Amino acid sequence: MGDALYLGTYDAHLVCLDLRTGRERWDVTVADYKTGYSLTVAPLAVKDKIVVGISGGEFGIRGFLDAYDARTGALAWRFWTTAGPDDPGNSTWEGESWKTGGGATWVTGTFDPALNLVYWGTGNPAPDYNGDDREGDNLYSNSVIALNADTGRLRWYFQYTPHDLHDWDSNQVPVLVDADFGGRPRKLLLQANRNTFFYVLDRETGEYLSGTNYTKQTWARGLDERGRPVRLPNTAPTEEGTLVYPGLAGATNWHSPTYSPLTKLFYVNAREDFAEVFYKRDEEYKPGDRWESGGTRNVEGAEPYGVVKAIEPATGRIRWEFKQQTKPASGLLSTAGGLVFGATNEGHVFALDAETGQPLWRFLAGGSPESNPVTYEVDGKQQIAVNAGDALFAFDLMELPTAARSASGRSAAPARGGRPPRTSDTPSGGSAPSTRR
Image (cartoon, rainbow, N blue to C red; front, side, top):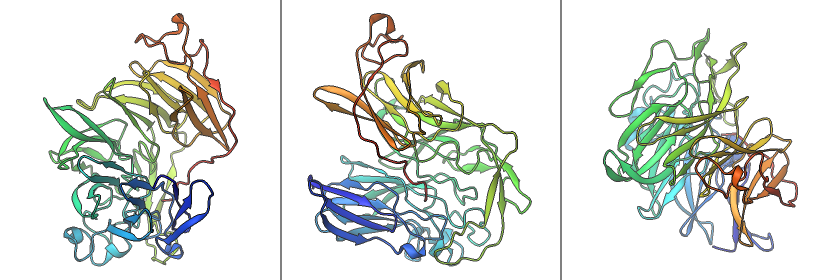
């Protein structure tokens, strides 16, 4: 519906508002917040439905993905992300552990209208760090699922981290790309996973095509021919603590990557040199209480940092890197003008040359941006917007003098030392998104 606004609430309601007046049209209770459920995800409009995922992976919820009728709010379908007795993957859960198995769907997925498939990432199994009572792969946690948009039926799945013990959710945004791979054109799904591997899948069939490391890790020898990780010994959490790369926040997290069909590169804001000590303990499940059965601590003296990495999907090779001082929490945006926009934890908004990674422009916003830059057009002019702290900044893209052109020869890009983008008059507001899962 073109005149409606849909939003999820922290107490697990999906609400439809009139876009012009703000009046409520309908309000649906998606789940009982008292048992740990919440909604922190942006709903996804798919044809005549609104698809929304659930948060609460640290509370022992049973994860699911819902679709609601956009006009009435009626539930169209639900897909459970912990396989129950009637599901093929139920044998991957010990006993009845699937009932409190986690698998939250707390980051927005994407839709392929040609294939009529919704792609969505799923989170960690519960409890996070102690898997003694949930033996098995724990499907469909830590996976990407491909569902029929009309019925919610599972077309295929791929599990990145079976029986996860380190809270490495696989909710990272799946990027859909049509490109040559292995000598022929294919419909691809690309994902830089929290577990440090960059994956290329066939999005029609779910076939694993390739997987390569893009940051330091010490938990797996690599991936086998099916893309399943080959775990190294002595990397599971213990009562005494086990040091593992990466830490629980992983190589990347909820912030969006981006792909440029011009450069044929995938860009991700990654964490590097990031480790933590993982612990496990016995903890009784109580509905509505956090249920992690363990935790982590930082490594004394360690100084992890952020890196924008440009990855070649065809090979997994890292073409270039742009280092930052600390771990990032901002997504990236690539544009047809040959730019990659991002932001640092220290409050700088920046633009890089998409081909080379050369920094072209920087603006100190004064607050930590924890969202994704977006682009849009006003009166024929392209603008970039990003939030920083409690403020929203918008910039006009201005043509640069010849001397400020990037190495690739494009002149429609802002560059440090040239004429900077013009800051538009915008109201304050737009705080950082919640990271509760």
